[in-house]
Length: 504
Image (tube, rainbow, N blue to C red; front, side, top):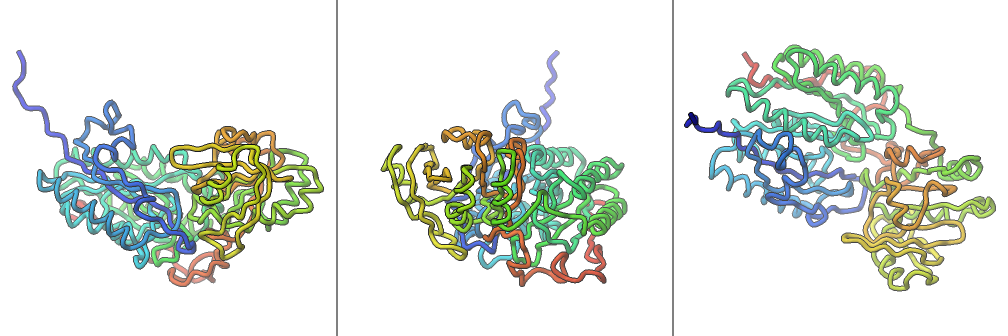
């Protein structure tokens, strides 16, 4: 006999957001077009866990609205942000008019910047909340290099973050944010919203000093799943923060979310205290030096490939990508020329230069003025003279290799990172057989880390300069470690408990 009972109604969950890591110390801009917004079904196609056959596909009626995402860069012009925000809100209004939304996944990074606005994520969260209403549960999975303002912490019901740097768990985190949401929506109304303990910690450090590959971050982040496993706790996280945003919200944050409000608060303040006690143990993930010191070490090294991180203009942290300071010194190095060694440099973006080189074609000799189109504060365009040995067009870029007497220079139409071995081999370059590989990055991503026989971090200038004191923050909360004397600071003085449904 076939049952005539209706199938349980799945919760309606919208997905939207703007995801960017933006340096306020970079002159670069990130426009709405560069954020490449996805709409409707495209939003859902970005993640397999809620697509057809995915682990969460049947847990909700997933509704894509708009999600915009870009490689790290400069701040978003206010008009562009306003355009994207208005489209998100209009989409939500239309869906709410059809039927109330039970939940919303706010897909954000945590360190987006907008000209004239100190807290893009908080601003967007408040605007979204005004449309979806107080009864709608909002969840977000963020980058641990995000900055969690009090506004964001109060407005979003469920917050979680990456637990590794480099971020090998980024997909897992996004899925955890969605799973936490549907798990809470399965509870009766009045029991869904957990308590949240938010503890801002006055620490501001670059990711290159806080990698979970090393202490103290490795053991501090190991505490997160231990806390999460406690009875009455749903999630825990350490946001180590984003230091290249000169904003009042810029600092580390510890959050613990759960139904046991007292335990959430005590766990968060204890973990924040542990973070504070170990603040002086943080150090760079590799030996560091000026570029001259690092290049000298690479030239003298008996092992290869020797990888140099040109950290100050790292495009994946917010650098403009076209600072020529390091490339100019590499090309002019008599020490490199005398050694007989060769280097790969990846990369210098210059649209006009890339198009001109491609038009000249493989085998042509060229003399090009490259870079410093966006960020010319540290060095002017650099002259690169050599032979074109590769021209590789793609759907959204154009890559050219210019071979000079000592350096294979990777020239691109658009800035991009070089993290994978395949990024080089498809250009005809073999990073494993190179003497020296210079990449615009901070800590090495897993494949680069694996192929490097040795490496150093060059403390170079740019929009994501590792020397924070050299940048000169003026708008962050003070005192702040390591910029100030913090001997009298109470690291948990700003702790706040948002009680959720556990208020009674």
